[in-house]
Length: 271
Image 1 (cartoon, one colour):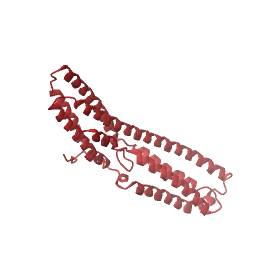
Image 2 (tube, helix red, strand yellow; image 1 turned 180 degrees about the vertical axis):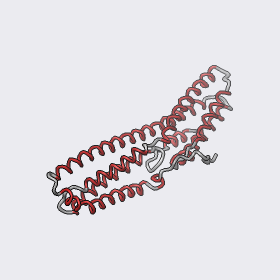
Image 3 (cartoon, helix red, strand yellow; image 1 turned 60 degrees about the vertical axis):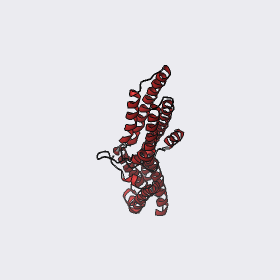
Image 4 (cartoon, one colour; image 1 turned 135 degrees about the vertical axis):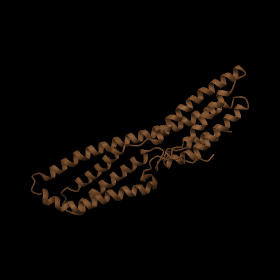
């Protein structure tokens, strides 16, 4: 079964997901270090001429940088923790879904033929679909709605099955329960495929980074070279942290995509 995305299923793609992780870091680094270098060249001399007559200029600019930097660092830290928390929950949801799928497979393997083979084939096909087609589709920003077919087909087969003994009835009830658990886990995991930080928050992070860097360019150092080194160091750290946040922002896209290994391991147990 080859999955082809239908029109309207494409999620809006972000340019940052079209380049490798190392290249994206270089983009962040080049942009912010460039802002830092340009700011030093343009503001170092002008700052002295503009604020030189201001009493306690150094104290004023230091106080302003401390307040702005603290608020920005707090925003960046909270965003990073939030994004990492979402990324961790998405990874856990994949593991839970794969475990529930394995439990359902073991349960249906105890049912009589021909229901057993039908259900086993459906679950194997679903695992193959998730590994070979769904995960690559998610990484490209495409909604793999075909994963619903397996759940609907399994549910249909189970509803048609009529147990002929108490043992078959107990196994059937357990299979229905496992199907419900797997369905809930799948729906929870699916919500993370489109999870992302709001655009407004990304604007605040990028704009705030430029404000902090440009304010740092106003530090009254004796030489421009010393100021260039300090401001570029700040720009490099900001670039690194923003790169990490971007990498884990959307768990099923980008350079740090949630691993499909739980599904791979579950598929290996199907015989």
